[in-house]
Length: 103
Image (cartoon, rainbow, N blue to C red; front, side, top):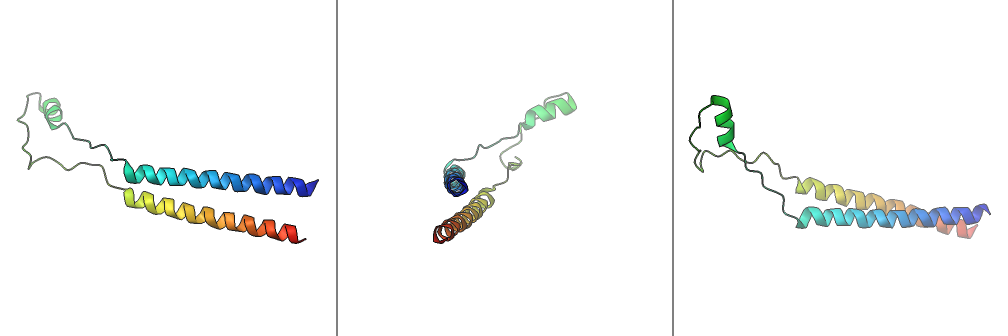
């Protein structure tokens, strides 16, 4: 009875790891293929609220850079590390299954 429960637990764990792997791969694809939303600061509204009188709109040279930082590289490396970890855990599950069969 306990051997059946052990095999059910290990097969359920391997299925869960495969599902997590697909989830990580889909999130990596989302990071790589989806373009981020660009945020443009509204400088005219800020100038109007601060002084009470409308200020002239700044030219293209005076526009501030977008405050959003590109973190694609960090997300991709994190996803690759998660996949490596899942592969190592799955390898250990397979080794444990083989050791159980030999007993």
